[in-house]
Length: 522
Length: 97
Image (cartoon, rainbow over all chains, first blue to last red; front, side):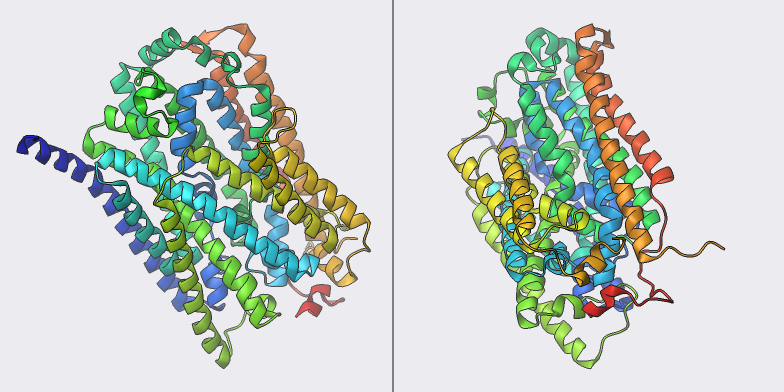
């Protein structure tokens, strides 16, 4: 039996780790609710436009932070750095490719999506796809793909966050899961897109603070930067080489460029943010600010993973056999409990901000893109009033009330399903996250890019590309089939491109009405 | 006074910006390769850190910031995103509604 004093100390340590997290969540929830209530009082558009898109009012800072926080997940904070502990600085060099994500998203999609979505009164990415290709089948397929892959990503986030919580506070995994689930569902259900975007900004700040605190902990515990580097050089000199003596093949660099660099601008959870900013100036500023922050965040946190090798010097088996345990372990080992509680706010915020953004997008896919469209096929145009829209009519109020209840109920429902699926945790968070990234990029890349930039793209091409590409990606993943040893994204994205081109060229041109909106310059 | 750009002109500008972004991506990839794989064989160390680690990560990041600043100031044009009907021709998109 353990002495009472030890048990009390452990409880105190756990409590010290728990308090900062709970305080952060309560404050973030308060801000989310307040911001949406304030917006609801002054909102000109209907419930749908406000709940799912915040009435296109995001300024530069919130836009940059919500894009980064949605994209930067617990995988970036736990899984990736854990892998970097094992692989070395090559992994940090690879993480550096993410500095391109913000300028790619805003530069390629930003203005065009902003213009087109305002022209159409579109609230979701699927609204735009539906209007471009005039296909309910395509819109429904897109909605299902979004819900499935978002759910997969959300599970990885919940698991990562709860594991971290368990390691640092000593409370059980399930308690951690319950706290996250309640927080996320409350943020999203009560806050809507605007609340999520604002809490994302708060989470982004927490992530930056977490990185700084952990850096201090590692440097202090490792005897300073020079000592940490000397320990790594002595124990694992290959970790200082870009190819990690074969542990980091060129093919891995290539596919990571595709997965977390080049094609991230097609991720629907990112693209929807280009429909929500208030003006081009906000987007331009977000591009610069976002590139500064994402570089600091992704390079910084991944480098901390590698530098942990100067503190955690045993082999992987000593740390539970999973690289996902490295960051939780280094937090506990290098920081006093109260500071560990502050440090874990970063990755927990990363987890929560990603889940809340995906939850609202998954909910919008079902409510807005399937259910509302089924109730009223023109709903995507009539009910999504642009920012300069007029106040609603009498029955609009009634309609809004129904949509409000269904949207919030659906958000709650998806949250509960994801929670239930997270109770038995899967391994290797970053791999699950990459699977979902690859699936979403395969499904949406050519449908969106060709939809916006190739006037010859047709409904048949888009349907074939989205369904055929995603199916080939999933089959290749399931069978473990690779071409030239490359990640299956290369198969999915190539098949999707070929099918888009063949399907489009084999069918007749889109109608003039569509071309006038998407290609008025022709 | 310069006339306000039409919807078609705004979309054309968006196309130009997208092309410029692709060029920026290609340049960033080249810089990333040169500053990382290119510098690694030199074996130079700074503060107990192989130089390629600093240039390949922080160097690429700084380059990306320069790209973002250039794009923001020189490439991306401020336009009014809300659609205004043109005086001489009705907007084709209106027929959707």
